[in-house]
Image (cartoon, rainbow, N blue to C red; front, side, top):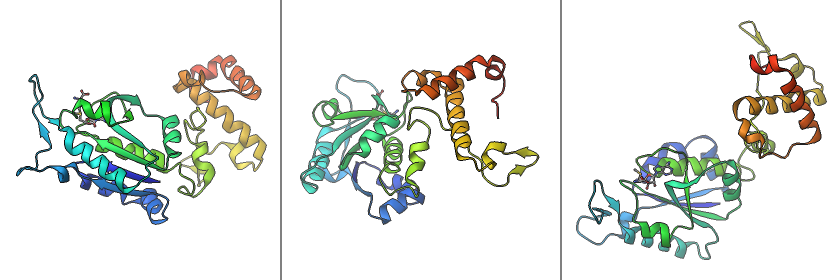
Length: 254
Ligand SMILES: C[S@@+](CC[C@H](N)C(=O)[O-])C[C@H]1O[C@@H](n2cnc3c(N)ncnc32)[C@H](O)[C@@H]1O
């Protein structure tokens, strides 16, 4: 996948994109990330990318011309562009795992990072095909939001994670939260790993994990359960979990 990021601050991306899994994805040729600074497309002496809002009010608004020219240059470079132009914005659709899965199917993405008071509305109306928010809070710029989107999408690209199944078992992938994970030692400061995980019985382990996924989701994010397609086995497990009121009210059962 090719990702182009339109940003006034490309050096902000250095740390997150030059480490660990995202770094390896680029080295393996599974992901290529490019930056385009709208300041390149300013033709006055001061290379102005922002201006005061029409109608008054505080702060500065990013001008439309440099952003349009940046995106047009990228599209020219990757012709034919099959991807999406996405504006990062606190007013956009909330980003989630479903959206990450959808974006991971694209050949390329163009992400526009706003800054200051945001971008001229014409960018939203006539350039961006989608607006994405990473949460109901306001960041100083779209750069951190773009990093979040690229990170979540990249780990879904085939070959990026060592084990293909690990993304599928993650929280949200199937609509449920993930089961608890343990590693060696089997006992640490007197706290033991659940017996079943040491049993070697794959069917028992599968069932225990499924039960934990349902139980955790019910306790922590019950609204997610309404959107998940539950199997007959899931429904039975859920009934058992709910019936066991004391267990449900108390600490999570191990
Ligand atoms: C300070 S914000 C502008 C907020 C704008 N005045 C508003 O109230 O909607 C500057 C830029 O940060 C980015 N941004 C801020 N919060 C975001 C969020 N929750 N998700 C995605 N991008 C965000 C956007 O690119 C935005 O243009």
